[in-house]
Image 1 (tube, one colour):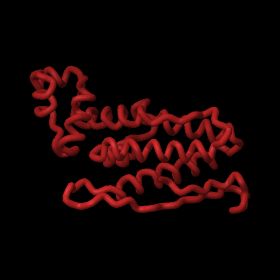
Image 2 (tube, rainbow, N blue to C red):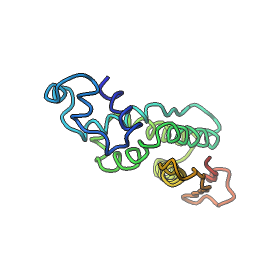
Image 3 (cartoon, helix red, strand yellow):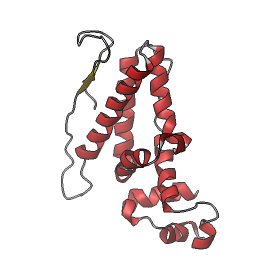
Image 4 (cartoon, rainbow, N blue to C red):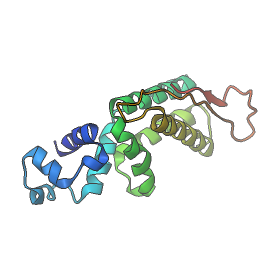
Length: 181
């Protein structure tokens, strides 16, 4: 309930509009009581990023790994459209926390994409590089494609990405080339 309320506040008022006091008022509790459930605002922001990323699904058994990456990119874009004020959290929160200390919900998409790619025959290093390109492209597209201001029309910007690692040639079917939404 606390994190869902925090998400609603961020969706409505942006990240800067979220404070422990505002959150406690929204859930009808004293701010001191709120600290029994969350240690600080940073934990609330991590939780908001985690519940949004939990909505991103990856079919790790899909034999069409490139198609599945497109589906993931579309899913990330949909999350960004649904929660545009959360995009800065999706970009910055995971990177601000060491991998071993990240909330499990923020790691699941990474693990699922890596599982998809390694089952398709990519090495661990290649799969990680492909994930990095996917995530960087999705976040860059989401961060720059849409402006928060309602007075400025939202215009999509088209990005494309490709990565060929190891000895694969750019014409190899195992080379990642896609144009995210």
